[in-house]
Length: 345
Image (cartoon, rainbow, N blue to C red; front, side, top):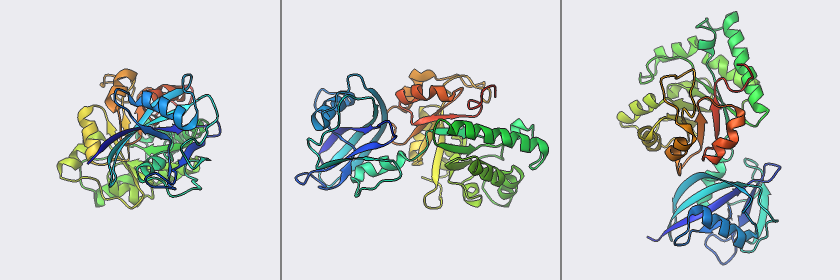
């Protein structure tokens, strides 16, 4: 089968919309909508191809634009096996013109008003809806293990809610509830149900939603997420390894629930890919209080570790909202943090 490499752009305007082009009548999938871009020619890098294609297709100049690598997706069509290198782009020069498309439209991710989407672009459109900011809980530790419902626990939970509200000043938020729990490789059951109840997981889901989190995921056995009405399950690197060692390819989750996996090195990235995770949390980028034993990656090693990811990646480890531009430039989708959302926290 013919193999084709493509560079494609997620062009962001100042209102937070992205540009889609409708394929012309004389092309494959006529009338379908796609992110603009085109074939990478011999001798070109994906970035070079992107700059050339957007000039030819849309009349845009990217010499002063901010261009960040994002996802790399593979899709098999009847006519070709296509690898698509997606970039996020801000600050181009010129007004988009439909030189090769039948029409152009600006769309708000998650509120698409055009259809159908080109099959290879559908997972990318879904990834754009994922918030860029992840606020991670540590209520049990912050309250020094105080019982759920006690004044100390409520005080720690209130500080976490304040972190979510502070993060939302910078954009949409996904909250990750990460509290101490039993052996992450243990089977879920009555003991696990008692444990998530003891840790106040259901209460923290409600607190996160009340504070404005658009998505809430639970770090723990997959059954926890479903039991408390969360939007997904997040697995530690060890839990992911244990699951894969048992022969599982992906936990059985209710339709629409997210699966996230923590990654610290190339072997853990391979596990996350084998489990077909929907996002990765990768770090630590800088030194952290929660994991002082881990050597920080720094942005260069972070970028190398996540190069050409098939799914969105959150950078974690000693970061604040001010680091989001660095994370995007390094290829991340967004950032995750425990303490970095409130000044002085």
